[in-house]
Structure formats: structure tokens, C-alpha cells
Length: 306
Image 1 (tube, rainbow, N blue to C red):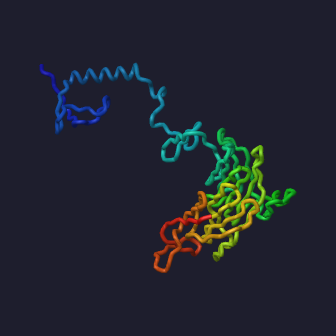
Image 2 (spheres, one colour; image 1 turned 30 degrees about the vertical axis):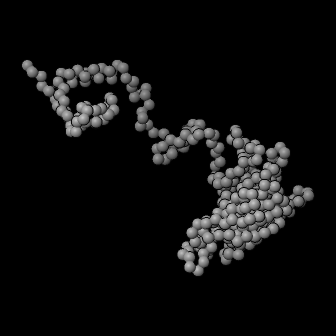
Image 3 (cartoon, rainbow, N blue to C red; image 1 turned 180 degrees about the vertical axis):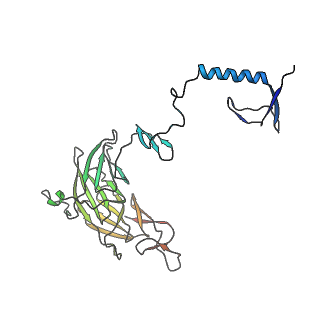
């Protein structure tokens, strides 16, 4: 008695369960029919059933690929995010709850790392171990004397309202000072001792912005000269670049730049400034709002010679 045959269609190049993409007949341009005897198919199914009962591990023994994990950190450098993806960042992760760090600067000798964000403090981190060495409060806005002699009482009353502004954080070239842009219109100055302990020292007040409704300037990027004597501050509201004596905080020179200056870099005898709001518009330029009544044209940079 002839065996009944089952016929099934397998598209050329179709993906099969056991061997991925299999080419049934090379060069074929259409589906190919193949015949499997019923008895052969039954033997295959019976063998598969025995294999499942005797050789394969049970679901209790093998974790399911579809198992669920709670959102958040689960192990060292393993974080599950809400979209069912796992992050395994390279290197060491340092948790800073509530900070939202937005600036970072490494000391010239590479021994301490400074960062700050949405809290009124400067965080000092060991760059190798990731351990938090210090949480340094911001110096008071009233402490404006660069050489107080005795410890000022204002240092004991830290600024609890200030926080870092944009990208303003840098070390002096010799690593003995740290400068931080304060969103409330000043530059915070910290001292770094020989044992690398950081302490708040004083605040450098910035000139008023001249903008209606916001008299306090918003400093953005900072840059310091190679000899550590000059500090350059991008004044984001008044569209100017300010040059300060880095030791005394005295205002030396002011330069007009583009609209909403942001980043500052000094290279040799030049200082480069990026302008968020573009160049200063002229009468024929198409403009758009740049915040607090300012208007800006297309993106630009300003260059000033020393």
C-alpha cells in the first residue's frame, strides 16, 4: 500500500527553526514543493517528544527569556530601563542622587575630579576609585574679599541658593583654585590645599546684566589664561565677555560679543566665544527671540585678541 504524502510549501530562502535561512534549490525563483512521507514525519515527531521528556531541562531549571526584571540598578554596571532595555555602561558609575551633574573638571595633576549640578555644592570625587571625597558648600555671596586674612564669618554661612550655571567650572593651571559660575550672578572661588582638600573662599560679584526683569547676570563658560592670572567669563544675558584678575577678582576689560554667549576657550593670544543666539543682528537681518528680550541672527563665534 502506497504511503500517503503530506505536501508543504517552503519559500526559497525561508527561515527554518533548526538552521536559519536555508536555500532549498539554488537559482530557483519561486516556491518549491517537497514531499515528506507521513511515517517519516511521525517518527520525527515521536523522537522530538521523547527528547523533550528526557533530555531537555524544564522551565523551572532554565530561566525564561521573557522573564521580567524590575526597573533600576540590579547589579554592578547593570541597569534596567523602563523600555525593557539593559544598560551595561563601561567603567565605574558614581551615583549622585538629586544632583543632575552638568559640569565636570579634572585637576591638572589628575588627582581630583570636581562636579556640580542642581544642588548648592561642589562634589569632589576620586577619579580612580569613584569615591566621593568631599561635598563642599558654596561660599557666601557676602564673602567678596579675596584675601580675608582671618577666616571670614561669611564662609561659615554658605550660599544655599546658588548653583552652577551652564558650563562654568574650571581649575587654575597650578591646581590651587577652582572657579564655578553661579546662576545668581557671581563666580564662586574655592581653594585646593596641598593635601587636595577643597574649601570655599569667596565670591566674585559680576556687573549687572542691564536686562529688564533680570538684573543679576548669568555667567556661562569660563576660561583661564595659561599663567593663571586672567579669568574669562561669558556673560550670557548682556552679550559680553568679561576679563577678570583671577586672584583679586578685579574687572579688567569687557568685550562685546554675539547674542547669548555660552562657551569660552583661550588659545595663545586669542579667546574664542560661542554664541547661542548667533551674531548681533543688523537692520536687515532676520531675527528670532533669544530670551529676556534679546534677538539673535544665525549661529556664530566671536574672537578677541589678547
